[in-house]
Length: 262
Image (cartoon, rainbow, N blue to C red):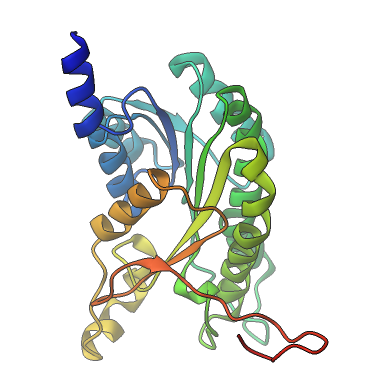
């Protein structure tokens, strides 16, 4: 390919030559983002417990599939090792796998459901980050995007445990993002409202009755792509119908001689 051809491709495919891991890639937000990353030129490794759906997405994007339980640290390490072995390295990790909680903290508390939700929604992000950092450093830097939720930015009385693990992801992004900047690694989060995914299946009737629009998965995928190709770190991008996605602007906490909010 000529120099002009390479330049033209780099303009139309900004992620050409990059390798991306997408967890929870068999459906919903993961599937849409895997397609968007591939369209932008990345080689994509699709990870999911749904082998049939994951392989289908991998075939569509011309990438790879790896079964992975993100709540297992060794499985995350094996996923990264797979990407390094088959693709030469990792530049991008979209840590997206997640599940609904299905229980509360009172009479409806269920330890198994609680552990499952925390394992996927929080451990999956922490373990995925821990596993991928060496591979990103080996490439001279990269980008990690974690799926949080508007439930990580606001109270969620109907599902406080889901709100708790998504608040934890937001806190991780805000805290770890600046810490990784010296390594040229950018850690950010996306915080969509009710978006097209399996998690909202039990809520579809309620959402329809209340006239609440469901965010297309492609809108979330486009936002992830904006984050990956941008230069922000420690940001939590909200995604709401009728609003342009952007980083949420957190107020400062009270301090000595300092206004409570600024």
